[in-house]
Image (cartoon, rainbow, N blue to C red):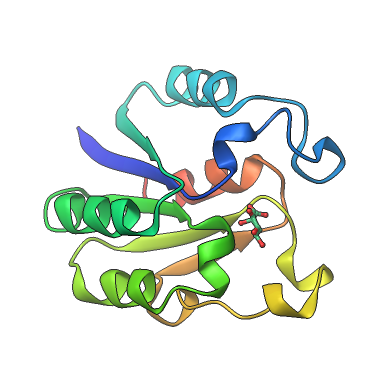
Amino acid sequence: MKKLIIINGPNLNLLGKREPEIYGNLSFTEFLNQLKEKHAEVYIDYFQSNIEGELIGKLQEVGFDYDGIILNAAAYTHTSVGIGDAVKAIKTPVVEVHISNTFSREDFRHQSFISPNAKGVVLGFGLQSYELAIQSFL
Ligand code: DQA
């Protein structure tokens, strides 16, 4: 069985409550349950943190063992050299995901420290961005 993990960064624990016009009404827990039901053939692990170092720690922990990482580093995407370096340092391929189309938003969201070392990037499809990233590993 393939082992994948979704890693979500800051404020994504508020999905469903946070700016629903951008991020939708569904909580991530509800969405994750649907995703797991749909893809019973893969093991889908999940980690969320609002803390940069914890995200780096998790990338290091799973990054030599899992088959794929689906990473939405949220705001840290645009600021974190440390998370970018961690993505570069590990063996497991990382697909960068964003719910919104970051390129249609403020200029500071156009920069990503993850993209240069990601296997691919999926953005702008709402929560379906995660689903498309999962499919890329199957
Ligand atoms: C986000 C986009 C980021 O710019 C933002 O800081 C987020 C969420 C997205 O999924 O659309 O928190 O990563």
